Length: 197
Image (tube, rainbow, N blue to C red; front, side):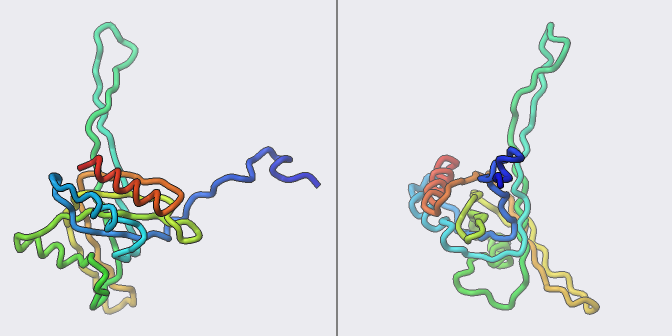
């Protein structure tokens, strides 16, 4: 009996899309732009050690402005040129728990409160999408994040839903890191952050 891929003419070695429920997040304090501490950033932003757990992440989005120019003598169309890129805010959601593990450096309220108290520190981070085996497949790093908006849990005595808190982070840019192994992802994240600083 002939192979179905040969019979119908499709590639049996196709790559299926990654599933969006298997991810991890690493967050660390931003380093000053003038600092040469990139090695410290690359180690602390490695996808190997998740520093926070979330139920949902959104906002991995970039939009490029396009400038139009009406050139003299060209009446059929306007010329288009790339403009500035705008980054959407990252939105992190997770269940509220009374006391987080000491390794979890992502306490939303404490980070926001530090800015209200006048000594807040920006955060860099990496969101790593994992494959079926739990290995890193893709990663997105952000830099110089600020806690833009914190939303506490909605409480309703008539429902038995999990209490969810939300944090919206404004940042100065995303970089997508690809690589089949964790080592490539770490090196790629470090290089990407270095080129953005």
